[in-house]
Length: 185
Image (cartoon, rainbow, N blue to C red; front, top):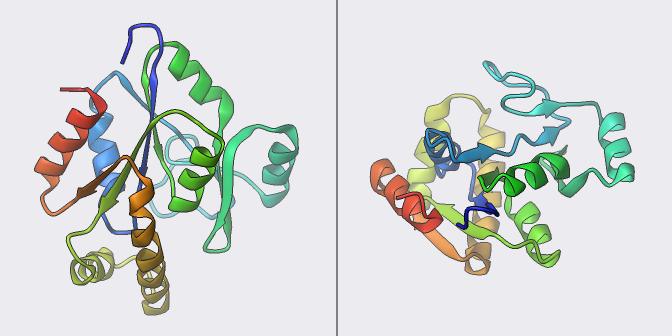
């Protein structure tokens, strides 16, 4: 990473692979700024508007699309999600690492638009481990877990489009690997 220009880092992977935990740990480095996505879904327990997501109405989201405010947006599990353009441009100008945690669909959009960055896919060690993690969260009903597992299979096939695949079988070693890939070591 040069002193004048930052780097966009895109992290994707199935729900339960550990990408949110890894992103939170990367934020311990002051050079890393997190992309707070906009979404139309309801906040989960403990989530704060403006920190975890910008929670907005579908009407507000559609207006932002019309204004060109997103570098990418997608519908996921019946809700809209998008990455706002202005915060990313400001962080890159300051020479920071701009960290995006987005789904495969959003990452594919960014790649198709030619957005330069480092694309990292976080994968679980296997699908049984993924199932245990999702059940262990105790945040979703059984049918939601099954839908997430089915989507995880589809997302896993997309890993070949990424610059790197990090198998999250050990949190500390996965974090070290990602920090090294990003140039934070």
